[in-house]
Image (cartoon, rainbow, N blue to C red; front, side, top):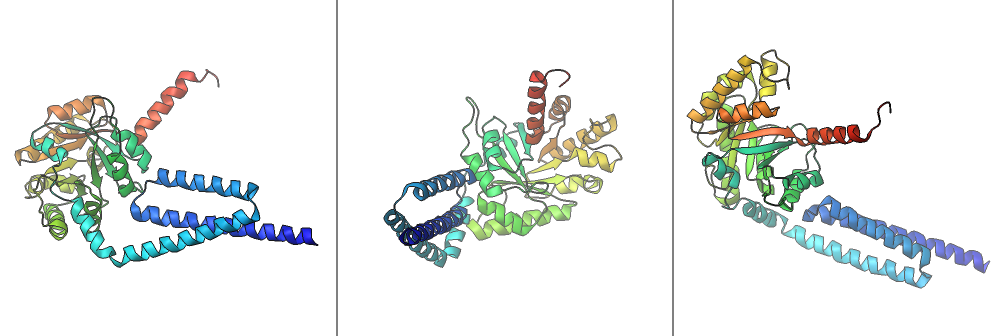
Length: 346
């Protein structure tokens, strides 16, 4: 009877310990989201907590288990108190953080465009902070974080890029965030996260003016700044025939720093196949588009699908050029490695 009672007591303590660790790990996740902790760092912490829990369950005496449960309960009370105190001043702190994110620091990407220095970039199709961190140190001048076609975790990706270690002789890539559409809430969100450069898709000059005004309002609310400062770069994307017909008007909008041409979408609009190498007529249209943007005093940009078209676009005056995607690089690298070591007939 005593042995059975002892076993029941031990089982009950183990359940309490397991539940206490579960609550503690949940608090870790909540706090990590609020503090912007990288997902990989959070997962390492959670893995360590699970390891410690399992050791305690296997080796600890009942007295030790009771003490650990009590310690966790005390820590929970402290964390809850800390969270409540922080939330009392949440709005003021949030506004202060957003204002600090868009202070008048120099935007190296915008400076390079103004100086006429071509910027080579990579389109990010992998919405993972660790992938962004790795690529940000590879030597590309800029990395486009696409929220329109992938479930991008922009906040974590921006933090990961800021923590990237560049390869020898290289500098960290500059982040360019592409919202799904010209949405004032998205503009507020990404500028508040610390993004310095936005790429907004537009269909007309009127939408380009709307984009400029949305950025102006957000910057004014956050820090009293306006588009045209050295810290914020506003790019617009033209990717339809209708927008191409208004290209000069779009590029002439005051407050727009550059215009990005989407050739794959334009070729589909002309009856071509998206992603194929441009035909002669397409190359002429692209060259004319780039020249139009430059004639308006703005930086022209484009996506070029192969090395030959990259050079053609640079020769035609493009200043910010996407030369590939991270997913494309991953697939090409995987294919090359598999082909190298896979035996014929396997």
